[in-house]
Each structure stands twice: as C-alpha cells, then as structure tokens.
Length: 72
Length: 539
Image (cartoon, rainbow over all chains, first blue to last red; front, side, top):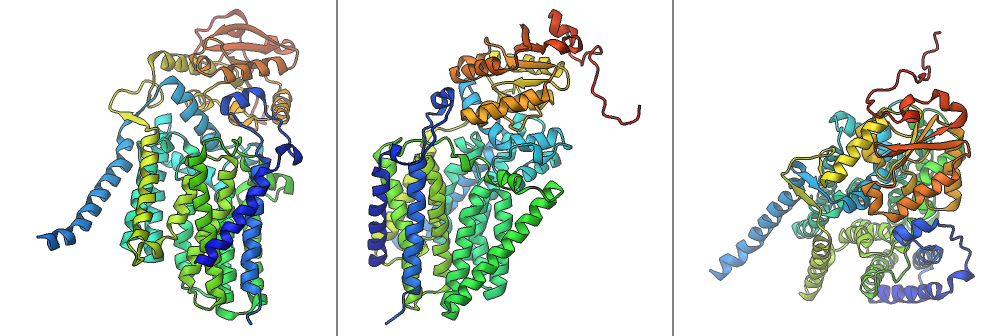
C-alpha cells in the first residue's frame, strides 16, 4: 500500500502543475451573463476540468503500466 | 459488569443510531416545509426548477415531446419522477418535496443493502448509516436543493449492489450484465452514469485479467461490454423518445447541464480546509486503485478487492464534479463512493486505523448536519403545501391567478417557474424550463430569445418590478430587464397587474384579451374574446 500511496502522491504533485498554469494560457470562453456571475459567482473552470482529466488519464496510464508490464 | 457493558454497548449504540436515523429520515414527510422568501427562491424554487422542471412538464402536459425540452439530469430520472408524481397524485410543491424525501430513503436503503451484500460487515453498515443519515435526512438542505438529493445520485447506491452481484458471475455474462447496467445508468442520469460506467468497465477488465492473465481476452470482454451498452443505450433512447433521433439531439440530451459546466467556482473558493479534505480523498482513491492493480499483478488480489477499487474508480471520475464546483458539499458524494471501499480499514488490527475512519465519518456527518438545516413544522401551509411569509404567499397566489387568465400561448418569465406551473397549470413551451436558472451565457440567451421569437405569442408576461421575490434577488431583476430589452420591437408593455407586466405584440393586439388592454383583471377564467387555438382537425 505504501508504494500505491507514493505513486498517487507523485501523480497529484504532477497534477498541481496544471493548476498553477495561468488560466489565460489555456483555451477558455468565459461568456457568462453578468447577472449570472453576480448570482452564483460562477467563473470559467476550464483549467480545473482539464486538471481533473489529466489526473484521470495519469491514473489510467499508471494502472495499465502496472498491469501489463511483463513480470521478470 | 464491565464485560457485560462492553458486550451490550455496541448493540445499544447501533439501536440508538438506527432509531435516530429513521426519525431524521421520515419526520419531514409528515410536516410542512417552512421557508423565508429568500431561501424559498434561492434554495428551493431555483433547484427544483432546474432539476425537476422537465418532470413537472411531463406531468402537467403528458403530450409534450421529450425532444422539445432540455433535460438537465437524465431521461429516466425525469420520467421516473413524473411517473411517481402521477401515481401518487402529487399536485403541490409540498408534494414534490415529499417525493424527494422518499427518494432519499430509497437511496439510503439501496446503499445499506449494497454494503451488506458487498462486504457482509455490520461495522460498515453502521459507518454508512452515520455518514448518510444527516445528509439524506428531512432536516438537511438536500431535500430543498433537489440536485443534491438521492434521486440524482441513485446509481451510486445501486452500483455497489451490482458489483456484489457481479462478484458471482464470470467472463461473458459479467460483461453483458455490466454493459446493460451502464446503458440504464446513463439513461437515468448521464453525469452519474459515466463514473458508474468507468467503474464497471474497470471491474470487467481487471477481474478478467486476474482470472485469465490474458490482456487481449480482457480487452475483448471490455469492448464487448461497451458494445452492449452502446446498443442498449441507443435502443433505450429511441424507445423513450419514440423514434430514432439525430446524433445531435442524442448528445444534447445526454450531456444535459454538466457538459457546459455547473457554473463553476474557483479552486480556492472555500479555502484550504476543503482543498485539504479533497486532496486526502484523491490520494486515498488513487491509492486504492493502484494498490488493487499491484495486487492483481502479484496474483494476490481477489474479486472483492477489485470491486472495492471499482468504487474508487467511480469516485475518481466523479471528482470532475468537485473540480467544477470545489465545495465541501460537492465532495460529499465522492466520500459516499469511497466509504464502500473502507471495509479492510475498519477491520484493521491497528486501532488507530478504524479510529481514523470513524473520525473522518463523524467529521463529514457533523459538518453537513450543522451546516444549514431545512425547517419543517406543523403550521398551516399558505402556498402549495409550504409555509411562506404571508406577503410572498399572497403575491404568488395572485400571480398564479393572473397567469391562469392569460391566453394559452402566453410566455411568462417568473422567478418561481416551478411554483407558477403547479399553481396555474401553465408551462412555457420553451426549450428550457427555468429561463434564468438555465441561461448562463450570452450564447444561450440568444438561443432563448430565438425560441421566444419563433413562438411569437400574443402575450408575454414579465414578473412585475414590485415582486417580493425580485426584491431579494437583484440579478433576477436584471435578467427580466435583459429579456424585456431583447424582445422583438413589436411587443409593448401596456400595464402592470396581478404581479405581472403584460406585454402584447402590436399586430396581435386585437387578439389579446380585453383585460390585458384595458386593465380589468377580475377575470379568473380564460377570456371568451380570445380565439382559442384549434386543436381539432374537424372543421
């Protein structure tokens, strides 16, 4: 389990890089109506969504590597 | 004495927890919801409109086609809600609140059954009860904010039940059942269906890899499950809508509200505590999955541990919801999914491990319980089975009476579309049920106005500026102003009465009821001067 936690922590650390990117570097389209922004405080969350997708992909790739890497 | 106490104490605590849980879950069903104007508008009306609006439309107008409306949370979700409302003659807002409470009980019941069949651990049942009861009780905000209630997340309680069943099936049968379940889950609610789909495909793939040690066979079975789910999904969609529809509509109905985001919040919206809990959950979920893969590789895994890891996979995919709305309340469903994976931890020999689990569960339960309780009471309801402030109730009743008297093709813009639909029996034939709640962007606003223009109704009603609902919600006021300024130029607002501003199109003014033109709003039945739309083909 320690190994699993170590790998997971590494993945999360890599993930934080995506969240640190300035939002304007990424494709986003903040087109919200002003009254909706006032109502809920909504902001464009493209970057966070992307970070989540990257996280899912990293875990999927890690799992596939663990499962399919040939045993010595 | 000490030994006897040690033996009876767990049973006693369990009995007290169960009694408290039942009391908390059921009490609201027999009481009336008490609400202030603001909490009614923001907490209840807004959420019921966007969640159960399509279901209410199906109840009020059974002839309406699913193709013509936006369904935010899934086709089966809406159809089931509508059928239950029809079956039990739910005709008031209070009745819909009770329906949600019943679905909360169904959710908790399914989750407890699932935990029992998956792990056969009374300890896990108790943990689930403590974690679920505060959140799904009658006194929590989830009853009021319908999108956070059990009906939306029902597949998360059924998923572990299905995994418990799949533990006993092998290969092709397992893949076929998983594929069929994915199609039903996605039809119920696509956003929660996708994490369930990921979990089931993970289970099919990894359990086959454990059994056969063949990558290609595992991949083949997973592809078979995907194929079955796609075929059944297409067939199910066609059966519900009544015909094979275009891929555009197909995807529009399956993406609902979540593809456009949930009206996101910045990652640091709630501060470091929330981020800390989220990181802990993320670390735990990914560790469970990776640990499972390591044990499968070492041939020390069993199918039950793969089922647990599948629940963690669902949690990882469902983290996307939290990524868009990084709030502790949104993390709750992720935690519920993860609770199904903690059976080995609570049986751990080291006492601090189960203690840490219990501490976390108490933290989660107490946090939600203490956050913002919903109020229910014995008083007399004054609007739609709910106890509202007198002026608000009076205003809404007058507004509903005014709407009932309006021409059949009238389009109205109200802060309380769910209440108005229930009280007047009138629902806009627009694509969206709640124009304010479902129009977030300039692009979608243009779409809304195009929809209005295409219908070109004789009358348009806008909520009057003196509305007590608009008084507590300036953004809604501004939205009504935006609509007024975007309406076609030939609409003129003649007068304000009965809580509405009445607008009529110039060239159709002669077709408009006289009371709209001259201001005699004493009429509570449809005006005879207004020529009704012919619905019969025989002339």
